[in-house]
Structure formats: structure tokens, C-alpha cells
Image (cartoon, rainbow, N blue to C red):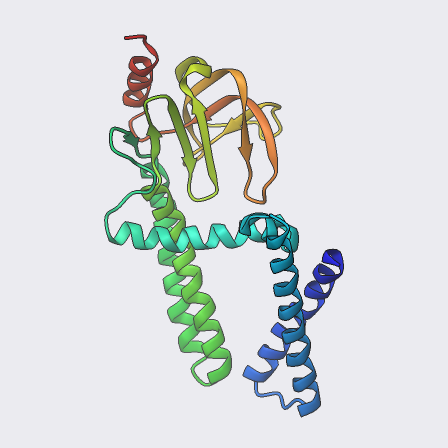
Amino acid sequence: MRPLLRGVAYTVIPGELVLVVCLLAGVRLPAPVLVAAEVVVLLLILAEAAVFLRLRRQGRTSRQALDELVPRAVLRLIGHELRLMWSLVLWTARRRDGVGPGDRAFGHARDGAALLLGFAFVCVVETVGMSYLLADVPVVHEIALVLDVYTVAFVLGLHTASATRPHVLGADTLRLRQAAHVDVRIPLESITTVSYELLFSHDKKEEGVLNLAVGSQTSLTLELSRPVTAVGLLGREREVRTVRCHADDARALLAALARARTPA
């Protein structure tokens, strides 16, 4: 049943988007086509809800039920988009995510800020230009404006996600993050060595190595006694024993790690 629902969703949702675009563009569609499309969408929603409730009754959590109904990659992408938008709120409120009492935060957004903010400025210029060029085509103008504004928010979200999600050193765990898509927790007891090592090139295919570069550079290298699991943007998991990361003040993070790993 669940694979069938997924297959129907892969067909119905893109078809619904096509109908919406046609309606916005002023294309006149036969009433039976519109009614049939909405009935199919409604039936799909009801079927998904029924399966979701059945899974919940079988003892699944809400997250487990969603994982069975919706492909994990889709859930990960949706979650990533929501975290980017939420980071804009956190940045505006001057708050940080995941930094608790007694934790030490180490920023890592500085060296990538110029590139992302420059790209955001280019997107703003493009938005203004397209708005002027499409002024005589109202429907296309509105669609392009929405897409352009969202693109600007997305690019700003990439920067604010890094700014509001710093690396966090806790009592027994080092939490390393990159924007809104990487979040790795490393027990301090599993760190065998940590060194300052400034690198500007990284082999993406290197086995067992996670590179969290900022502005194409990493400054700290951690060797682990046992692997930790790193989860990619689309949910791909891999075990890593070497982690390279960057911080605005890498030497301060290095010193803090040395103190935290030294027995009292």
C-alpha cells in the first residue's frame, strides 16, 4: 500500500503544480479536468492520513510514520529549508541554536560571509532587473518575483544558518556543524588527537574523512579512536574517523579542547 501511495504522489503532485502554473498563466482548462485533479489530490491526502493513523496505532512514532510514507530525502530537504528560514528569525533576534548553559560556542561563519552576502546582493539586483523587464507581463512577473525573493531569502539563510549554529563544546561532547545540513556530535573521550592544520584543498572521496570546510578551508584536524556517524544533506550516512573543521578562532577552540580533554 505504501509503495503504491508513493508512486501516486510522484505523479499527482507534479501534475498539480503544472495545473497551478497553467492557471496563473491564464490558460483556460476544462472544468472536468480541474474537478478530477482536485478529487485525486483529496483522495491522496485522505489515503495518506489513513495510513499515517494506522501506523500510529501500530506503535510507530509520528517521525517513524512519516519516514514510511515520505521518502527520507524529501523529508531531509524540507527540514533543511525550514531550518534555513528559522535561522533568519534566530539571527534577527540575535539568538543561537543549541548553545546551552555552560557550553562554549565557536563561530565559523566569518570566512564564508563575504561570498554568500555578495551572492545575495547579486540576487537582489537580479530581482530588481527581472521585476522591471517583466512589468508588462503581470502573471510571469508575479511568479518570477516570488521565486527571486525566495532565492534571496535562501542565500541569506545559508549565511545566518552558519552564524546561528556555531560549533559547541559541552562538558563531554563536541558538536560540529556546517550551515543547516551537517550536525555531528563527537564524544570528547573518543578524540585521540586534535591539531591546528590549515588546509585549502580536500579530497571529497577520501574514505573515513569528513571535511567541514568554510571558504574552502579547514583549520583543525581531529583523529578519533572510534568512528562517528555523519549524515549528509539527503540522509546518506557514513562512518568517519577523521574530522576536519574550521572556526573563526581555531586556536581558541584548540586550546579549549585541550583543557576539556585534560583530566581534572
